[in-house]
Amino acid sequence: MMQPLVLHGGLLLALPLCLTLDFDWTKDHGGSFYYGTFPAGFSWGVGSSAYQTEGAWNQDGKGLSIWDVFTHKKGKVFLNETGDSSCESYYKFKEDIALLKELKVNHYRFSISWPRIIPTGIKAEQVNDKGIDYYNELINTLQESQILPIVTLYHWDLPQVLQNKYGGWQNSSMINFFNDYANLCFEKFGDRVKHWITFNNPWSIAVDGYEVGQHAPGLKLNGIGGYRAAHNIIKAHATAWHTYDRLWRSRQKGMVGISITSEWGDPVDITSQKDIEAAERYIQFNLGWFANPIFNGDYPQVMKDCIGRKSSQQGLGNSRLPAFTPQEKHFIKGTADFFGLGHFTTRYITHKNYHYSKGPNYHTDRDLVELVDPQWPDPGSEWLYSVPWGFRRILNFIKSRYGNPRIYVTENGVSEKWQCTELCDKWRIQYMNNYVNEILKAVKDGAQVKGYTSWSLLDNFEWDEGYSERFGLYYIDFKSKHKRRYPKASVQYYRKMISSNGFPNQREIDNWLRKAAETCSTTNALLAADPLINHMEMVTEIVVPTVCTLCILLSAILLMFLLRRK
Image (cartoon, rainbow, N blue to C red; front, side, top):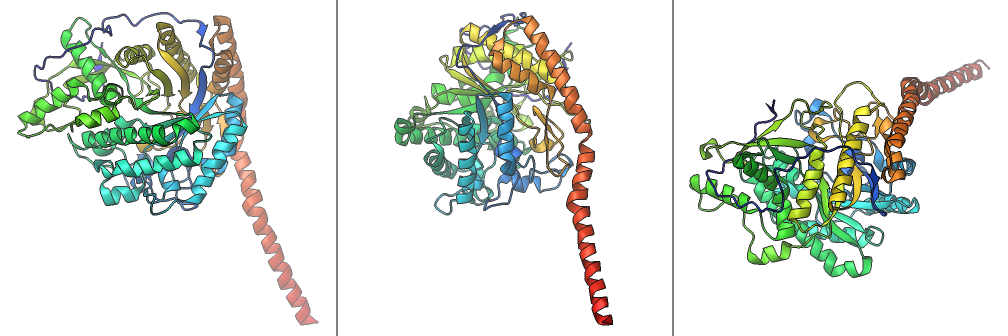
C-alpha cells in the first residue's frame, strides 16, 4: 500500500522520451547485509555549515546574510528561532575539533561564511581581516590535528547587500561576485585546503529560496525563479572552477567540485513504461538539473522538452528554462574534479498529467506524483524516511550516466523531531549502518566512492525547522548558556565503523552496539545533571558576585558611618 507524501507534479503531454539502456530501472533492489571493508584510503568524516553552527551573527565585522534577515522576520521559522547564536562554534571551534579527534575522522567538512570575510559580498568594497583570521585559525587547528578540511564556499548564506541591490541569484552579476569571493578563498586558504565544494545543494537554493519561498530570501517566483537562479549558480560554479584551474591548481594541487543533493526515485510499477519515465523525470529534475550541464554539457533533454512544451502552451515565446549558448556549454562541461553527493531518502514515483492551466510551477512541470511506503521507518521528520536501498541505486545511476566519476558522499544522516532528549539514538545507528552498507555494495558494483561525510557533527539550526530537527552525533541544549556537547550513542558506533573501515563481521558489529548502549547510558546521567551544573554556574557567575558587591557596599556605608561619628 502507498500513501501520498506531498503531491508535487509536472506535465509532459505525451512527449517521447529516449531512455538510455545503461541503467536498469527494473532491477531488484533487495539484498542482504554485506560484510566487508572499504578500499584503503577511504575517507571518513562529518559535516557542518557556517550559518547553522557558528553563531556570532553580527560580531567582528561580519555582514548580514540573507538568513540573518530571513530568520528575524516573524513566521518564517518554527517558533521564530534564529541562528544568531546556534552552537557558538565561532568561539568553540577548538572544542569541536576535539570532538573530531574523539571520533577519529579523516576529514571535516565545513563552510565559509561569505559575509564574514566580505561583509557586503563585493570584494572591491571591503575584506574583513577578522573573518580571514578566524578561518585561518580553524584550518590550522585542523591541520595540526591531522584532519583534512573539505571546504564549502556557499552553504546558502548570501550577503544580504547582494540580495538587496541585485536580486541575489536571479541576477547574473552574482557570477563575478562569487568568483571574486572564491578567488579570495583560494588565495588565503588554498595552500592548506585541497578539497573545495563551490555550492551545497543548489536545488534547495533555487527551489526553496526562489520558487516556493520556504527558505531565504523567501521569494515566490513560480515557474521562473528557480530555473533562473539555478542557471546563474551553474555558471558561477563553472567560472570558479576555471579560476582555480587557471590560477591555482598547478601550485596548490587541489580539487574543486560541487555537492548535489538528491533523493532517489523508483517507479511505483516497474512494468509500467509511464512510471519508469516518470521516475527518470524525477531524477533529472533533481540530480540531472545540475549534474548534466557540469558533466555532460547541457540540461537534461527531458527538462528542456517538458518545460519548453508547457511554456509554448502558456503562449510564451521562449521556454521558462533558460538556455546555454554553445560557448557556455563548452565552458561548463567538465568543471568538476569530483561528484559531491548529498543523499537522505527515497520516493516511489508514478506518472500524472498536470494541465498547463494550473499555472507555471517547477513541481507541476515534472508530471509526476511522489509516494512513500507507510512501512518505511519514519523518525519524525515529515520528509525523511529510511530507505537504504535507494542509496546504492543513485550511486550506480551516477556511475552509469556521468562516466563513473570520483564520488564523495558530502551529506548523509537522519534527524529526530522529538521534544524529549534521547542520547541512545538506536534509529540513527540503524540508519547509518544500513546506508553506509549500501555505499559499500555500490563500491563493489564498481562506483568510485572515495569518502563519506555523516551529517552532522552537532545538533544545529535546521533552517525553517529551527532547532526542532536534530541531525547531530552530539547533542546540544540550545537553551543553556554554554552549549555543552554531549555524545550520542551513534558517536561510539561511528568511531568503531571508522576504525574498522567498514563492516568486518556480525560479531564485531554486535559488540559495537553493546558499547554504544553503555556509553549513552553514562552520557544520559551527565546530561541529567546538567540543570544542576547550570544552577551552580548561575550561583558562581551571578549570585556570588552580587553578594560580594553588596558586602562591599555595606562595608563602605558602615565605614562612612564610623568616620562621621568620629
